[in-house]
Picture 1 (cartoon, rainbow over the protein chains, first blue to last red):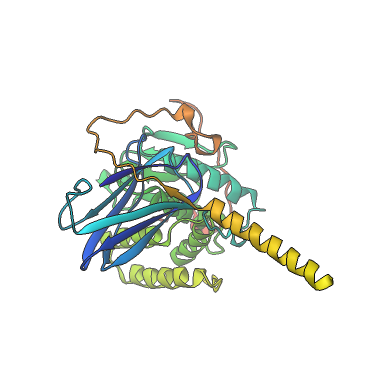
Picture 2 (picture 1 turned 30 degrees about the vertical axis):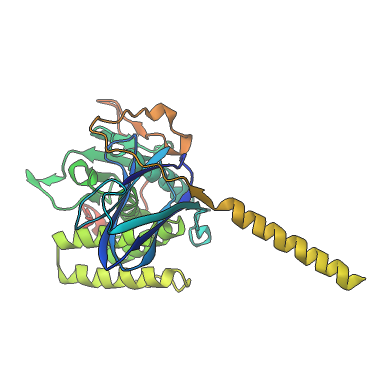
Length: 260
Length: 84
């Protein structure tokens, strides 16, 4: 089933109430009806009875398309699939924690604006070099990231000498808008927020503090790190994942201290 | 007299909170649509300023020197990647 929801570029949370009659793996996708390669979530949950999907959207399209279906049966029209009922879709205000973000820092303000605009439009932007309005930040949107002619597995990296961020367009197109924001904030944190600029865990946690404070969904943060670490399953990345997981769990309780 | 006045104030505040809660939660009419095979038309000029595409440098245009921070001697040449 696909439902059209007018979101009008507002900040909001979508509550999607779903009912099943036995345990079913239910897939939810929220995409932009107009802009290509632009999605806001793509996740599943096994539901037995009633359940609600919360889709936090600090950035939303003019019109969102909400895909809901039972993975076992595929995407069928309403009335065709008796294993699932969509009870309601509700728009609620977005909960943010802006007090955890140091918005008195003009670099953070500028980069959040730049990263938001880049991430939302990355699905239709052509390869090239992009600059923030104040020209303090540069993103090279490359078809792929390569070293010595070999394509790299990373979706992004930052040159600490110049501050220039390189993004792999091939990989970025597959990511949701929140995934893209999390990646860009990680690269930004390395050079502009971290005390120790090559500390990956510190960059992860500094990025997550901004990301979660802006109201982006926790599940999308887990997903982007998990997806990347699956491509590079090192012992260090396992430790990173555990620390990220712990940080996200504690965020709601304000137990978020970054000691690295 | 004071007790009655207080009760009215609390009732008023309660109603106000209820009104805010009710008006901020909007049930969406469930409008089912078919999957389109056509490429959607997208015009970025319709976007609000906070979502407009960022500035793209023209071919051959000088790349502005971005600001640097936290640089130290051993960091020269370092390129931290997202996946390591």
